[in-house]
Length: 272
Image 1 (tube, rainbow, N blue to C red):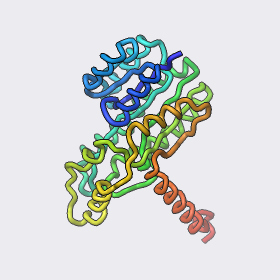
Image 2: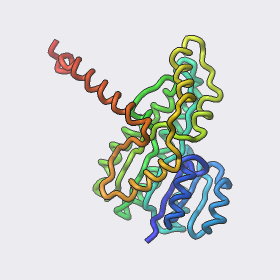
Image 3: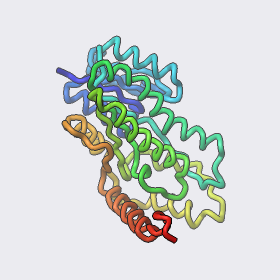
């Protein structure tokens, strides 16, 4: 039986590639985006019986609930929910515009919370389902210039860890996918309006340059393929890094934390 997918941020990048691959596999999709008309070609190709497109601003709780209701009315159930919508606007913490900072947290964290809460009653009543949060390696490590974006992604990791424990008795699985660099327009959008003051050129400015100088990028189609693979696994991981660029960063972070914990263990044990 064809599975029903619910995907946010479907109009481009990983979201678009995921929707295309899911449809090609024979499953059906509820593809949401701020501008769903960008998915009209897929409706023409696969037909309205295979894909439902809907406008969704993930920060709008009422809209999220309404779109989930439409999805269930049309397809009867939800099997895989992919929270993919997100964006970044890079700046140092000191240079950050607070309105922009709040907006990034609203989309990247509260958007995940809103959609997750909207689908939980459906999945719980079904006693099945898989929620996949598309996060980033920046949900494990911190890099200069991405405080708002990465803080939100760290929050997604914590939220999903708690979520997985709460919903396990209902047969619901939770996975946080943490990709490294992906060949999308993310980097250009995140850095195009970056105003980096002189004191932060050596940190934030250098990081932005390093992002643009990267030579190894995962393709959106590769990340999408990995998400589909994980959706078919009987016992999927709670958290998984994706892409070769993410692996060394994750390993360095884990090693540095373990070494710091060991170095300061006498203080942790209150033996000083």
